[in-house]
Length: 301
Image (tube, rainbow, N blue to C red; front, side):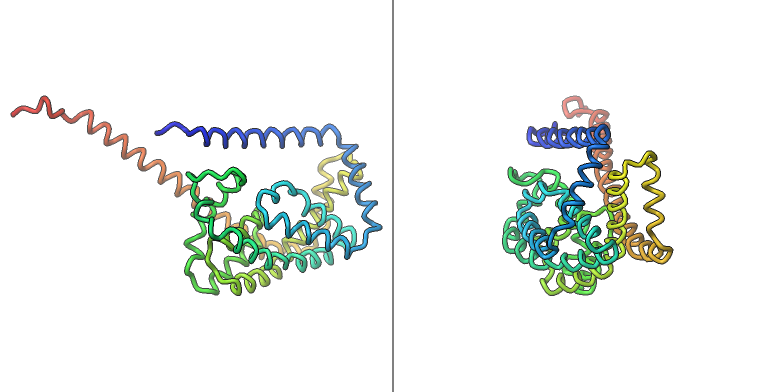
């Protein structure tokens, strides 16, 4: 096995530093819980006077910029969560989730922007040996893995299957929607019409997942703001927010989609591990045979 290159070591070092930074942030939150709760309350009180139209325009402007330029996307991580909390405080969870789904239609236009800007260089982006300084190594690794796993499910498949994959991705939890958008726009080669139809239908089916996010995030903000003595109160209070019908709907949409998509990911991981182990085993057997075989210098004539 070849030793890791200097670039690979640098990438691992960057990921290690990111992990340490995350642990530092979580530790700071733990020891400054009261200050964090007070700050959340201050922010939520402040945006009560905001004009929703102004908030929508600000949100869409930032989204167009950050989602059109991948490096900027990484620097606005909590922005979507903050806006979600604003919608929940302004309209309530149910109506706020509807507004959120409607605003997500801007991704249809961003699809065209990404396709125009990055399609010509996508082969280089998906080549691990090609060095790109301006794009996160973790994003590139995820993009390469995503391409290897899902290309066979989408590339040159019937239109209805492509649209179905988009819908399932929309309903999946613990999934990076920006990675999906970037891959569909640059690598999948699906038509714009197929993406627009599949994405719009996916927004309708995604509503239970969005409603769940609204209730969970709002409950977390309320718990931090109220300085609850029992951390378990967050879980009990959150569960009380869901009616039996909503829970069933979430299980039938997000639950099934999440199991299917991440089931494919688990299968891909095991397949990659087996593919890595088999050549190693075969090479070891070849080495054993080579050691046991007589050399040409001592073969009797």
